[in-house]
Length: 191
Image 1 (cartoon, rainbow, N blue to C red):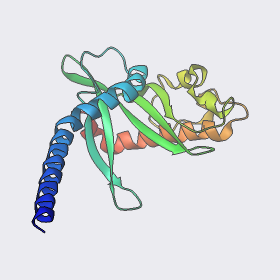
Image 2 (spheres, rainbow, N blue to C red; image 1 turned 30 degrees about the vertical axis):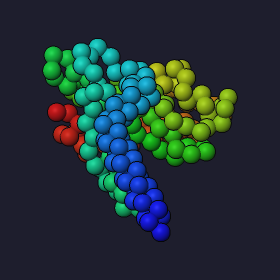
Image 3 (cartoon, rainbow, N blue to C red; image 1 turned 180 degrees about the horizontal axis):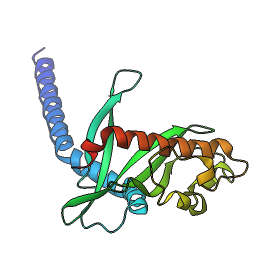
């Protein structure tokens, strides 16, 4: 009986030490792992839509709550600021809209003074390969550059994809959603 109690005490102690060690490792590595994911996944899209900055937009990112999802969990917007001499002149952030087969995520860069698009990059999609997937090509995304966001952008202002109307509309909707997000949260985005 005594051996069973000793074994239970030893196993409990080992489990407690292991649990504490894992919790410490998690707390120490959480921030570097998140930064590495952003650096490797989001940075190429940020670099595609922003240029001529002297800061690290990934490191200087800001995150704030913009609402809740259908389950009541907070929805945060992550903003990547582009600064020159300490002044934010542009921001990049993600916006999305429903496409043919799912959500289409668009990283968009905005000049904060001109309220103009500095570029867009489609970061996530599940559109049809060879047709709807052409929304990722520069021939489709480049015409968005320089568009002033006074009003929503419509199909007449860009090169639409023949046969991929839903995919084209999804990117337009994502950009227009981004415009509305910028208008609503500009003060929080530009600091």
